[in-house]
Length: 138
Image 1 (tube, rainbow, N blue to C red):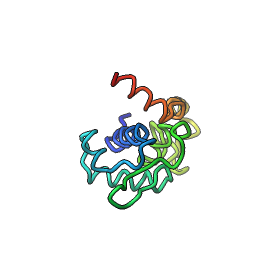
Image 2: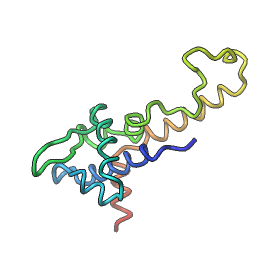
Image 3: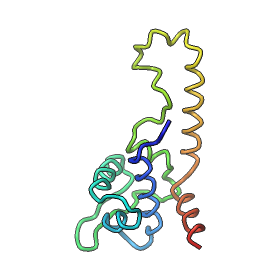
């Protein structure tokens, strides 16, 4: 499985917002410049993040994005799900239409791998990522 650029960029952008949480709203243009991501692409990403109530956008000359919850309460799994949807390696359920579900030997394996990915993402907060970023910049 490969996380799309949308998921990767969303996590990177949210780290920037978390790093500047105490200084006020972070403009999209600043995030785009710091992370070398298209501002138009970030607009799409932040629409999803707003929809999932992870950030609030503030308009005006000093506008930008702020976290809706403390960084300690937002996981990387929350961010990835907001822009990617459910975290699954293989969509084995097919909305109950899979006729092999009752005999499939690999279905449990894919479910375990998906659960492991979710555990790692849900066990890593935005505060953890911001702290790691601060350590790397020293």
